[in-house]
Image (cartoon, rainbow, N blue to C red; front, side, top):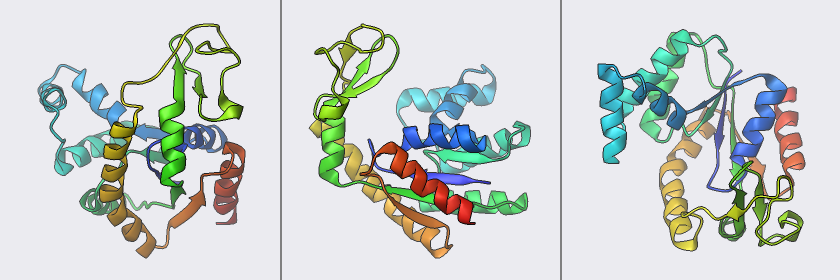
Length: 216
């Protein structure tokens, strides 16, 4: 079973990915993690990826697919949960061709829908623990820490990520709209796109996703 999660920043994609991996024993693939793993190898190809990442340039579609192809040849768990890939229509088409070569396909593409205002509230209020990584939100009563700027779990200081501000959010949100719209149409035409209301609680969102999976 292969799943793609499409979602704007702060829509809850990471949370749902963790829950899906636990329930269905999926191989969670993040392009960022793959790039960093390849770049750390120290071989010629790894050094090339490291140079691209260091320069801030985008990794070309051909190189991205080459990395995915090599990864799929070596990984044992072929049940994929894709996070951050594909990012463009061309990547989606190339990846579809790659899967067809292996007599495989994408089974579900879940689009997590959240209003722009809700996303902004989640991002600008997000606080993270420096020690254990726990997440809080000072803009949402049910997610506020019991004590200001202190983690409930370990008592260490909370911090706000440098890009968790309105200006950065606007850039990331517009980038998401620009890049993701073609993907939505692409997977809708293939009848594998399912829209999920991600304004609900994480438990309700997960229940909606799993009910779709179980019906197939």
